[in-house]
Image (cartoon, rainbow, N blue to C red; front, side, top):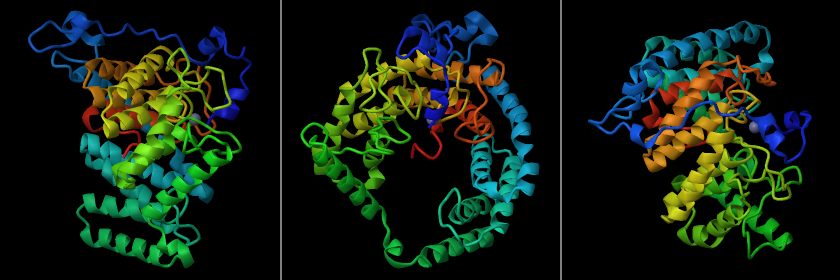
Length: 404
Ligand SMILES: [Zn+2]
């Protein structure tokens, strides 16, 4: 995603000036080893006071927490201004489940009842517009029904919650033919078969046994590419056998690893030799998730070392001129740092994630370009809010609709 927007930039391909053009020079000092915030030792927060995001215990400090919450309130006002537009334009119903998800996340983090109420407002509106034409989560009836069940469950409206679940089940059983039989297993099997077939066609069965392409390109990143597919195949819920993981997934991951640039970043596609993009959709921030998952599954430290290398690239080149969103923005890159923090428990990454959040707090002041969908979860302000809410309570954070 964002590739078309990239093409519009007038850049010198692959040069240092291009890298600068695509990201801002990171103005933040890195966390010094003496500032690790070990209990009983002087911490960064104590040395420099209000500017440090972590307290003596290495937790997000009160001031950073307060700043984050205040910014969320301000940004939400802008996102809520969309409501008027939604009333007059039924074609953007997909915002409804997405905004409901955002408010559910805010409720999870803050436990403020007003967020749950707002989630209910959004989902009620979506539920009034069910039309039976689509069954997908974002654009069809399934999303509002599923999210509605969750909202009512939190509100302890058990009858309403059950009603939504019954309607969801009816929707599933109303599907015709083989679609009704769809299970995770069938999908996973189809994904594996497709990957094996293309790999064979391309005569890469030895080096990369699972190969995929989209729009005739073999993309690498998390949004449309190999890293995102391998990441999903390694999820425990995908139930891929250990033999398949060993024989097909691991060598494919290693194939992608060998495409790493000297900088530690990754190409956007296998045919692309330029070290340009540091986004969740293309580049190290998306590949990092695959590497962390590979480390979890195979317990080999080399994957975590590669993920840490991605973390360095993100720290250097991750404050993006494309904006603050999740897909190709600073918030998405911040999520990679949070994931690295979860995997390593190294406070350095939490500190860096907080600094990326600090950057997002100054939303709109850096001269970034305005995304095509400026309020959306994946490109716009809703994504930045989601990130801020996760940073202030980082232990349970996860990249929405991607990390499971
Ligand atoms: Zn993107």
